[in-house]
Image (cartoon, rainbow, N blue to C red; front, top):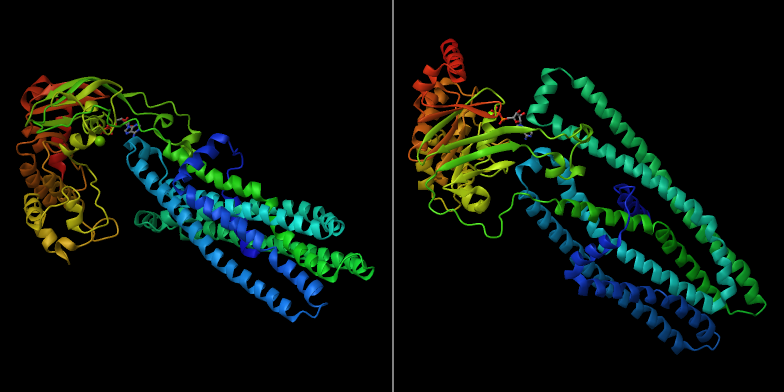
Length: 623
Ligand SMILES: Nc1ncnc2c1ncn2[C@@H]1O[C@H](COP(=O)(O)OP(=O)(O)O)[C@@H](O)[C@H]1O
Ligand SMILES: [Mg+2]
């Protein structure tokens, strides 16, 4: 009983309060469960059969007392006792089959929903990820998926089983003795009304506990990450952190005690009503037996039955909340599954074959999409939602430029000018607001994303490595790459020596929690990864400050090799990259203000000349 109540309350806890159960939602859930239709019917059929079997023991007991015993019929006693054993065996086998069905349906649904969610989410455009809280998304994948599964197996099974048990038991009781049955029902309101209130209170405090737990989780993941731990230490805030955390932990403790007492009240009340109900049956029934209006067997059977009706009644009192909660989870899962993906291949998208690497920006205007266009509201943080989302306004204005195959183009401009944004339009991380980006003469929206991205290698300022071995990180670019190929790429990127010196060489685990690589080493590994991909176009966001001079020289050498024979778009901060470029694009406030070779731009004495002088001064004063 305790377990049942706990299950009931914990599902109730994550419920959205204002949800409604629309026919559309029910239909959609049903269509999702369609693959399991046969099994679901089988499961429900077994549940019904089990409820009917529950009627047998009291009736058999009645037969023993009323028929077999008075007639001294030993054979009938044996037969009836045998029936009880058979029923028990039947019940046991059915229960195994029922559990197998419900778990294959439930786990199957979890599998379906999870795979669908993961795939849908990973294909979302990058704008989705910039606005979404990862924690909320992960909880959607775990808690809500499990909650949704409960709708189909747990809740549905419980409701059907309880309704059938209740109905059959009441009918059996009424047939045996309708007056006594009516009498035992008189007690019900005494119990049901408080039960409903206690149930609601319990759901409320359990929800509060869940919220507090979630907030403690967020704090822990944040404070126990390396950067968070560092911040706490450097600002000497250990005591404040402890107090804040202890405060919430204390509230969770108090809620735990309160909810334990509430649920015990529930159980105690139920037991009391059951006991009183049974006593009333025997009180009145005993007199009826003495006066000869009913048999002893009938009285005993009624006594057993009456104890059986209270438990399903309790569950059914809260069934609506229970069912609603489960459907809310489904709703929350569908909400993510329905998030539109504006960046998809259009039906007759073509493959980009043997790209030469020509890029045209044709009157490109671009504004970052607003939250409403790019994310699921409930996955954003409250702070994000509180701020009015007016959209960013255009970040690039009517920008046109052509980049020829094999050309090395440097993009320079003040911070915030739109350099990174411009390069992100080439692999179609975002779509232009107006105008077009063309690769080899094809609008990028007319190409398949897979072939477009295969043609482009990006090395960002802060290259990400997965928490996997060096070899696995490299093979991400080319799954079948041999060790020889990987070594060649690593040598070209000037990182082979570093890898070879690591504890397990190419099998060393790197990434956030693995072997720590310096900023320059990470960039060179990212360059090796890009070389394995062998793209026609290279986009490079040069690191500004996180490289020491030795690393900088190595990265520089690696790049000289990497960019050979490829169209290169380099967001340049180093003097040498800029002066060596075939062409320089100068961006300011999202506009292309100058373009040309270094000498010409310097002579023109515009924005570039200013930027260049600042860079030269910085270079001289650098250690
Ligand atoms: N994800 C984003 N959403 C909204 N605005 C952004 C986003 N990323 C950058 N911006 C804005 O776009 C402008 C250009 O940014 P960016 O291209 O990163 O500049 P740069 O690389 O030249 O320093 C900036 O004003 C910046 O605030
Ligand atoms: Mg940038």
